[in-house]
Image (cartoon, rainbow, N blue to C red; front, top):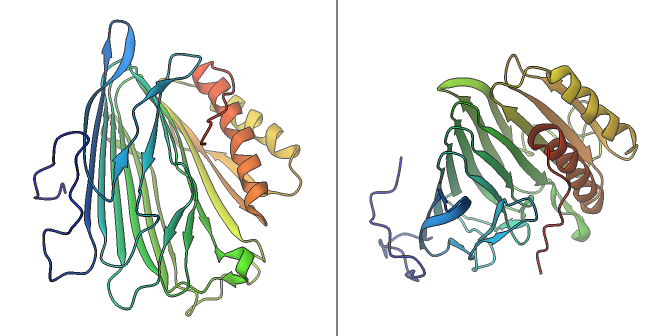
Length: 295
């Protein structure tokens, strides 16, 4: 549900919560892309801090590229962040973040993050945020819901670190609860929920993460594409060149495939993400690899 508060004009945000008695901030971001003069244009951008977006640029294949920001540096307990993204017919957009999302320790309330993406007919979306780093004692609840129209397609990345691994802080957060749903023409094709409470079930044990520190999910969905065995074989071919990664890919019942992976280091996971995303772009969009410069 969209927050009841009224979004502010583009480029303007308030620095305080609407409820001063509550810890945390209410962040809001609303983006809309439409086809204008043969190109994808950002026609609406409204935000309230701690959410924000940079002005879009254009990739070599004509895709609009935009970076989503949280200039406060992370999410704290009590924050409630809502992002709504809409792509009009025949648009192409690629969205990412400049760095990992840090979730800080909380004494009480969880940090909340909700994202809804609607994709119009014959449009494509690439949604590639950097991974989440939950700090010791943090509670993070997030959800991503994607609704794709006729002939549309999308590539979606979702990843999680065990914590601040370089500090030896693995699996010390209190809870991660993540929901990821994809619908194609109002029909569910991928419904996933991940809930991790390290104090109740040790994630390190065999059969869960088995000592790996990073978890990633890559979902590839395209309406009206039929040869998913070919796509799965192509993704498996990429995985064969990455022995440091533990991963598996399988076709959905229709319209897509999903890849799950484990990595020991952030660099291993970033390399895997780039290679797998590039191959997915080739298979689904007929487009080449691009370098998303983040500095």
